[in-house]
Image (tube, rainbow, N blue to C red; front, side, top):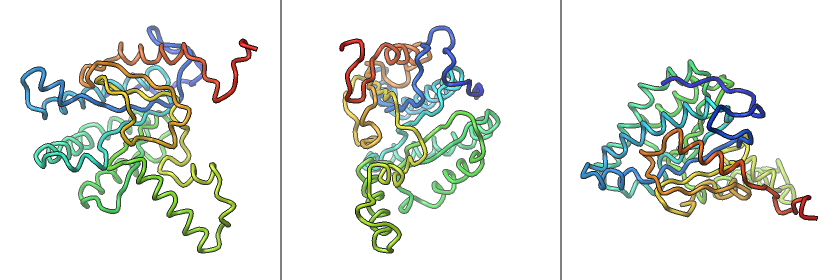
Length: 255
């Protein structure tokens, strides 16, 4: 998989995209199973095609100059799916690392994993850590993989970190600020998502980046994730570029 090096994020995007680029785009990649069912195929084929759509999205993000993309690859609630489907998804993860990791590394992509790790099977944890360790010094596109992730659980982990610091005397309770909470999250050091894209017609966050999404723009489309291609990505970027982001203020032109 070829990924273009990041360009300056302030540089206008390539043809078909927008000059007002988000720094960080997050994806809720929904509809793999529905895509397959609509075609009389097993759900596993939908997940396989969804992985191809992910490869397209990573390539396109690198091409247009986006700094960070976050993908909701496997939520903490997804473990409740049928065992055969979960097993297939874990196999896809292994194949993705084995097939794509070296190419992503060569393309200067840095991989970061967010989500709970304490209860992961050792083999899966080793794969995730391998991806992070190999690419930790890369300076191009940041690919953030939300795996075994739930935003409420992330906030609990952040609260536990901060409470331990208070108990140890490292900080005082009055030192707990928005900045301190942000720094205690799994996404510490990353910009909040400017744009969150969800496919397949659903219009909810599903326990994804609840804190970080406070001022994100949302883009919902009816396409199932396997059909999300470069043109669909550009449409989302174009929609983002047309919006006024006021962060609770007032547009100066309206005064």
